[in-house]
Image 1 (tube, one colour):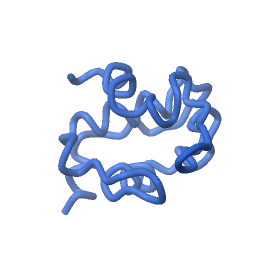
Image 2 (tube, helix red, strand yellow):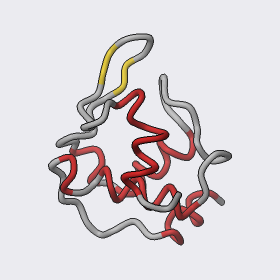
Image 3 (cartoon, one colour):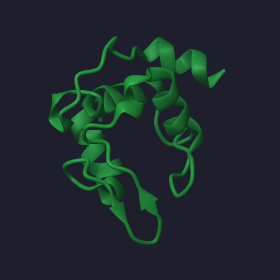
Length: 97
């Protein structure tokens, strides 16, 4: 899987819901739709790699390209976001080390 939408559907939508609207249940899963926190690529990378709150770390489950793809999807028009610059695989690799 390399497409951000596919990764999101399989890995993220169960908690953040299909349209990124977020949920509260066994944990708090913030909305990704219209989230200004996603504007900061380094912050988004760190959260996916390391986890936070109810969100587990994905550094062992997703490779750099997959993390970049899913973050670019979440930071894009699908959720009403339009953040740039695009997160590159190398950005994730640097944050991982």
